Length: 162
Length: 135
Ligand SMILES: Nc1nc2c(ncn2[C@@H]2O[C@H](COP(=O)(O)OP(=O)(O)OP(=O)(O)O)[C@@H](O)[C@H]2O)c(=O)[nH]1
Ligand SMILES: [Mg+2]
Image 1 (spheres, each protein chain N blue to C red):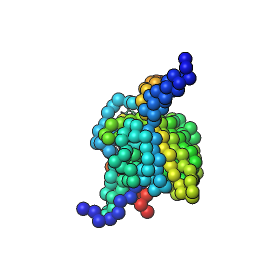
Image 2: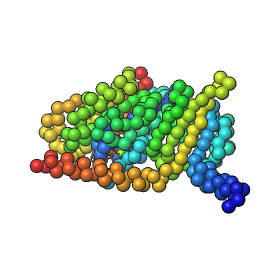
Image 3: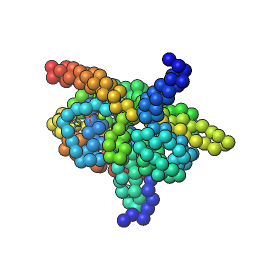
Image 4: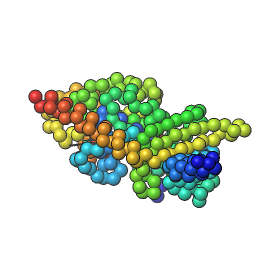
């Protein structure tokens, strides 16, 4: 039982195509994973209710089709976002090379919105290979093994409530 | 052909290709359902209630300061089925009240076509990258 309030928050997942945005969302919302790649067109929207303390948070998850650069994404998708997850694929350097430029661009559109950098597909690399990756990130994740999936969404939800 | 027949043809075509293809909804500033053509889903029992339980994704899209907003491809569930929509939202004022007019078009056919193109493009780029990395 919760006695607190119900809030609604919009989270967007952005990043290059094939990095695992849909897989992370699917793991988080439905506890499922598939190895088959089916690209997302436009945006796919899912909902999950998360409990934080006494409050219920309606998370509206906007899983946006990946682009090589975020400047190509229709800015309507960003509208009213409360939190951002930037996903990259540890096994493909091209997916994190433009991360900081992308994030700078998105932060101009959405100032003061919390953002997480997520290094996905950790299951594909050895610890040593991971240690050699020099870009900064907040979470090392795997949509396949569910490593840190719940954790990243919860951390972002808490940050959005502050 | 007589003019009256053209009108009949037009009305039939309008019914099949416009009325049946687009769900249109008039909303108040607080997202209350005022009126709809009830295509795709019957909203009549919900008149006077919020649209958000039916289309949660609208919650972050209704912005009175934006006169027109369009999302060309949006996938969301309606009564447990996933539907691909094109979504257009217009906001306007009448007698100093704000209203929203929402147009949702089912674009499943369009989706299938675009999906094939984007899937092929992405797979080609990824496998090229992987081939270079393996060298
Ligand atoms: N091994 C492994 N594979 C993953 C992981 N996450 C995603 N994948 C695979 O990577 C491919 C792409 O995943 P998606 O979730 O569709 O990627 P996306 O970012 O949504 O791609 P777009 O919709 O095209 O932008 C699929 O074949 C997934 O099975 C992961 O953590 N580990
Ligand atoms: Mg996707």
